Image (cartoon, rainbow, N blue to C red; front, top):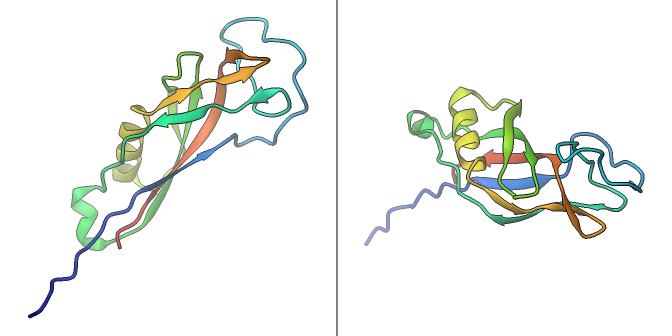
Length: 130
């Protein structure tokens, strides 16, 4: 009795807290509600509370090609990602799939002294087939 081998798609996601280095502690709140803060010091990072698995691009499934896409986002006080953009492309199809998934993520916002503040972060979306 032969058991067919199952292929498993395993997209993985890593939350990267900035493309820029961590900065010294911020001692004052931003001057406007839209001023982006940097994670570090007194600015605590956002917490990922809900994700959506990215879909491996169907036309590329037979090639079993791994890919990595780095998506830059802003996490505002409401925790819904804005300003999504590709920081590092994994190819057009992978980029579209990564953007589609990341726009559905939800976060507990970054905080400064207990108050929600907007921050810019990068999300790593890794596509692999096992």
